[in-house]
Length: 168
Image 1 (tube, rainbow, N blue to C red):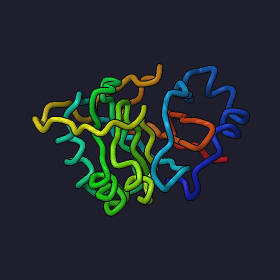
Image 2 (image 1 turned 90 degrees about the horizontal axis):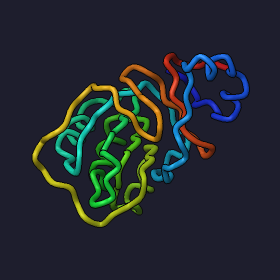
Image 3 (image 1 turned 120 degrees about the horizontal axis):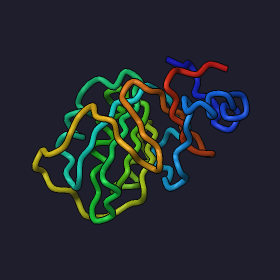
Image 4 (image 1 turned 90 degrees about the vertical axis):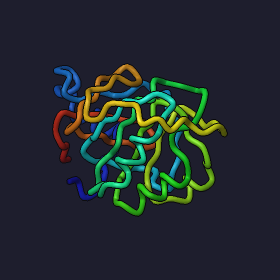
């Protein structure tokens, strides 16, 4: 695992060949920054759900080991799938970050946690608890297909996904 996350702009400048051949992709700039960790990176684990956060909680109860959970929440803006309690759980279990193609809530609590969070926005309503979703499946969010085992790098300039760990 990378000791320090890489600056995304520098990674793009230094790796034009990876961008050209599709091994390095940038997500469209649709995400807001949350969480106490503004810069984060790690190997990706994927989850697909819709307005239901039971499987999200199950993932965050596992040891994160510096990984990044990428959640395709279907782009829903009708409720939040991640809140302060789950962000605290992510911090306590060693997750580097969470990218949510959907909404979060408890923004002040999340901003107090040492975990990186990116989401489309915040919403005060909580999600349902049915346990419906898919684990470890390829997801497409912000114009980019993301698979488990790839590497995600996030900072103030944006989010990159690479087929392999990048080293400068």
